[in-house]
Amino acid sequence: MDIRWVYEVGDIVKLKKPHPCGSSEWEILRVGADFRLKCTGCGRQVMAERRMVEKNARNLRKKAQEV
Image (cartoon, rainbow, N blue to C red; front, side):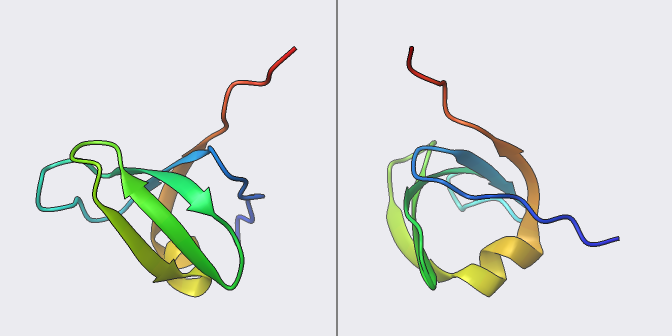
């Protein structure tokens, strides 16, 4: 079963493998053909292909909605 999430800037995505700092959660800073992700543990920013993020995503936590 293929799960498709809608990724938006500010969402937190949990990936399969943890970052070397120990955190496996990343904040999405840019969405497109490539994603810019920021590690929630150490703050490191990386660019990753959309396909890689979609394949390795285990959970998606939406950003808090502003009223």
